[in-house]
Length: 75
Image (cartoon, one colour):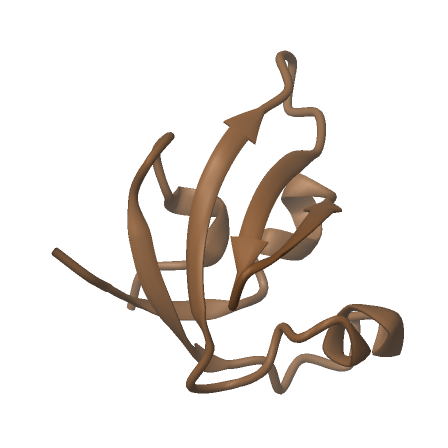
């Protein structure tokens, strides 16, 4: 299954699973929950953070954390 960290700029998806214990609670509080839509806005160079739109809100998260969140790609 694809991960949030695999999205390319402009791609959209729907969060499917955030069950990893390594995902910060703050991220869940900001809306990174199963069923929410997500779109990659920008990615920093050299494996830096990624900038996302999650249900109309904007968040920046580490690439390593994004690779723990399972998504379903949208068209």
